[in-house]
Length: 407
Image (cartoon, rainbow, N blue to C red; front, top):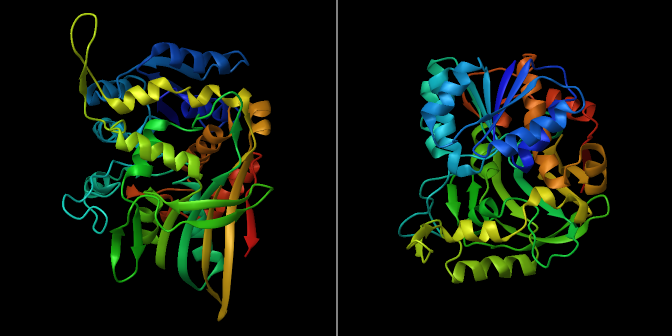
């Protein structure tokens, strides 16, 4: 397998360090708009003697350039590690070049123009699923939403449906952490651009018979007790891909996603919204040579520390998981399937902070399953479309086991 990784930020760099320990691929081209980032990611693995990695420069928004780079290096698959703004150009470029495609977040949503907190407008992934027939007809695969959330959380949903339940009442993704960052009052552990997007958009809920609908941001707060010492964390509804993916392949009466953000974090996001600093529309800002058009959200992102650089200052654990309730053999059952990463461990083992490492390990596992034909298919498919057990077994083999807690 020959892979082109687009995006050499925190998650992309973690992908290279994880993949370097596995033999399933022949080459990985690491491409980024900033050649220094791509070169740094490659240099880190080259230093330990791995010559399968090559750095290139590419603009992720330039479909023709991405397709040409895929063809020039004979890549079989494009792994997208950029932010969601670049999903569609990379998705189309992979199809144009005849390569498979894999991402960790799906095409962006647009809220309903008149009833944003009741009805869906354009949903996450709609643009990709609209082209599913084209991929299927070509016998090509686009594996979408294959990070940790979405990704591993969806694999857990499929595992629960196949092996733990006869009927499922609710699949609820629950994400929480007890991470702290020394020296910062506000320092998100993941891309603030993406965090603003998913947290301030209307959250989506799925109910069988009603379909997908929306609520207000941060709605339906609940306290969820996370395992391995993290403890109780207040979680709220957030827009996320699992709610759009799980019902396509898993029969459940209700699907939700709730994120443990914390009251202070929520208030900060609300303030950004009140000030218009969450906007992606460019505004004119005075510059030395005249007005410059900049996006307020990009300014916020540029003002905060790069999450990939925070590992040495971070302490604690992050937990991604899927809570499922239903029946088995006629009896009620409730479980929480989860994956916990300790920042001290991920920094020691890989030099990557816990959140980006946890996100990155899952697409590498998926690539290995595709390379060995343990997973195969065509069309635009989510993780739920594939058998869960091979993935969970291989994740454990990578040295990062998952857990199951009866509730």
